[in-house]
Image 1 (cartoon, rainbow, N blue to C red):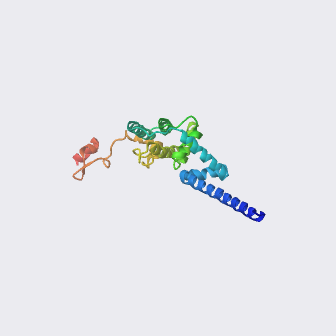
Image 2: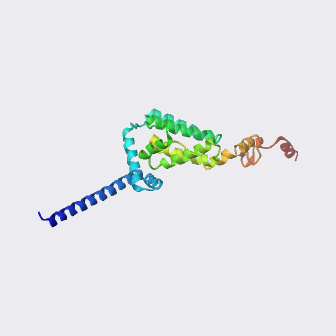
Image 3: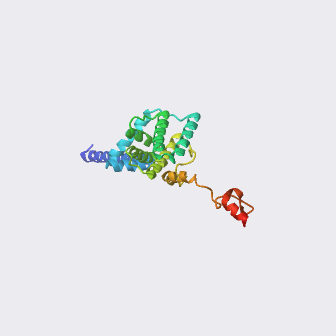
Length: 234
């Protein structure tokens, strides 16, 4: 074999290997982008390097494969749904405590399904493999929960945190809707902020305009005694 032919063969082999390497990287990027969705772009943005981000995502997948994640039993799912209803109902009276309860409830569900819950950053990384569409909601909710512990979160912040917690809660329970969504009542924040006014208003007497009617006329119960006497005198 002459030298020219040998060089040509080597060049072809190098080109083929280079193309295979490039194609392999492209396929890996496409696979990771499809699996992680918005989390892929977030990882790239945070690391500032696509290769480093992809190595991190691959490490997450490898770690997740070693975890024994199990679905919830029906009884457990029903129990958690009921607890979620209580958390939502508590928000109007105590947004601070409701947010704390939501954070604890998420941890309980994750633990029962098999996710380690000791470190938040690791929890988020593990969750991102199975629930990439909502892991950023989880991070946002956790940030508000931390601000809540420092008394730096507004009622609107806490309401939004509950909405974010609900996104992950739905995914973890594998249900379409865990009862009434925390954002469903548009007046939830207003009710929490004006609860004192609403409570004071319950002691005010009922006016004729608020009372029921009977054949188009105010009912007897809606007319104050003194005013009724005056009308009878007429």
